[in-house]
Amino acid sequence: MTEQARFGAADLNSVRKTVIVEAPPAVAWRVFTEQMGAWWPLAVYKIGKTSAVDAMIEPRVGGRWYERGDDGSTCDWGTVLSWEPPFRLVLSWDISADWQPDPSLRTEIEVRFIAEGRNSTRVELEHRHLDRYGARRDAMRAVFNEDGGWGRLLQMFADRAAAGASP
Image 1 (cartoon, helix red, strand yellow):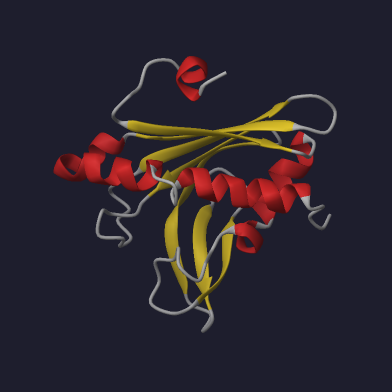
Image 2 (cartoon, rainbow, N blue to C red; image 1 turned 90 degrees about the horizontal axis):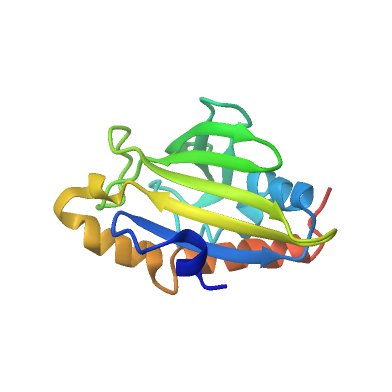
């Protein structure tokens, strides 16, 4: 099934991506939420001023989503809006079109973990409210939708989860 068929007509204010993870939902959830620093390409996808060594999600509504630098500093990416393990996660993405923290922006990323059998999970990601980028919406949508955007990140996550991520 195509992404358009699964999610409906294209919405210019969102990007939707899907990946099949060869792991049960609980494992996929754990790798996504507890081991983000192991699969997120922090050497190139970072916001802070120093080299990033980890990406973290605090496991509760209102928790921070952030990167930690090699000097111990942190740089917020957003907050946890919904925490429903192991099925659904909603995060705010508070990063401007200039790749700077902007807590007033608050686009949203919803991630759903759907069992596709005993050892397989369909992970659906939607990055929505891109209209909050104003005149730069189309450019940011292209960044999130391109080969190096959410699709690449989800594949890196899926590969990590399938490789038998640590418990």
